[in-house]
Length: 113
Image: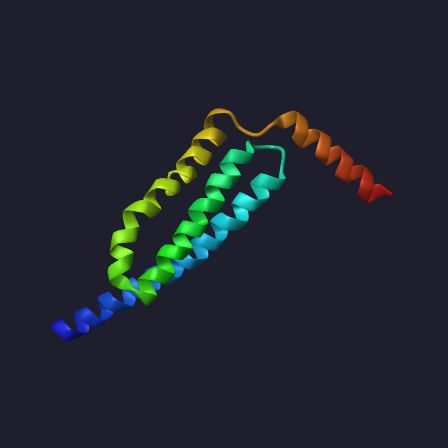
């Protein structure tokens, strides 16, 4: 039973690491979209993209060099705080509504023509 429990814990750890690859990719892409948009501050997009790259680096380090990943993990958490900054910004300030409406009306006009 102990061997089975160890195997299941190892599989769970590997599955969690794989999910962080998807999450890191999501952060990089969301950061890129925020950088290109004008609705949110670009610094939030840059920080989110850096956090995503950090998640990807940490995940690949976990697979390739687990001992090194243990030393790298605290440094990955620092840019990970950008997710909290983004959530706080959206809760407190929100998006720039004037730019949102202007781009929505411009997109509507381009679809009509």
